[in-house]
Image (cartoon, rainbow, N blue to C red; front, side):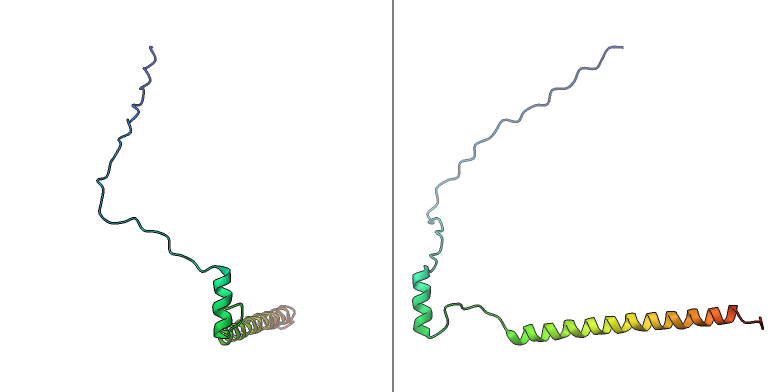
Length: 100
């Protein structure tokens, strides 16, 4: 039998798209404050040099919530181990009983 000819894929030709000129200006990047401007504005307002927005009340609440959840999980784990030990003790006692 003769081998089938392998098809040659067609390569697409790139199409150049030209947009018509518009009357609106291109957007420019917004100017950012330089470090000299930032220190001048913070010293004028009486604030500290580092202005980090951290709410310590929320941080403290999240910390204590995590601690409570951890304590509850440890208590549930201890309860599970206690119940498991009691059940195993009862099973051993029942199996070793001469009154079976």
